[in-house]
Length: 327
Image 1 (tube, rainbow, N blue to C red):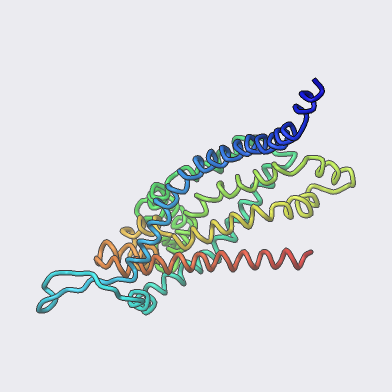
Image 2 (cartoon, rainbow, N blue to C red):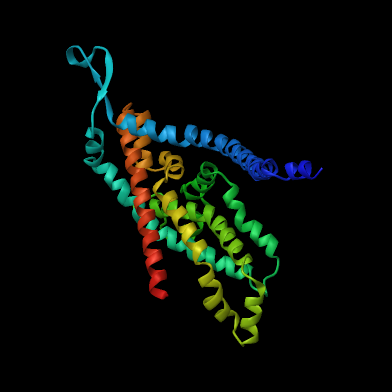
């Protein structure tokens, strides 16, 4: 009996006990593999949609911009075929004065419209989040309502207010002795800025209000206990905490400004001040669907995307540099 007992507790038992942790380790490792496969199952559909809806169009636009259409036969009346063109389309786009003038126009547009809209949205957000504000839900919905109107519809609505024969604003101005033309060459750009400001101020305001909602209320209470006024709370607490939301909305506004298209496209039949190259997006659209030169239009679209990325990166770097200087 002793030998049998010792045999059971001998080297065989030690080997069995040595094997158990490995089995346990293998069993515990299996759920991790299942979690990895489950995570991949959730991520792969997103990656497929991202590649199909984002990467594929971008790669196709770049590939199209590097090619050109050539025609064979006398006077170019033969068959068409595509050939590699290198950077010829980019050179032609950069040599087009109308295309470059469109860039200058939208940059001037953004330099005036973005700060104005940001200041207005910030003021509305601070007023609606103040302790004395009444009818907050009503005014918040009223200010946000223009964002729900599509850009084309908003441009049509404001077009009726800009046309001299239909606009009540023009009649009121003429009754007061002012000669106003909202669609003239010198004022049509600011008429477009008015439409964009009317449409997107409420959206920017809601983003800022969401940022203010994330601030703990104890911080405001501590400031009031220390004797801070409402203006001091807004200046020294609320505005610094709004900085991330302001940077985010400004980046969105820069990108949206460079992509200005619907508003000038709708107002173009109403005035001769807006031509086919009034904005870079409008110029690329005209090249592709009016001039039939989709290769150059693709090059202009790629240049527009690069300028948007560069402008956003410069702004983010400047905003980050100012933050470091304050620290």
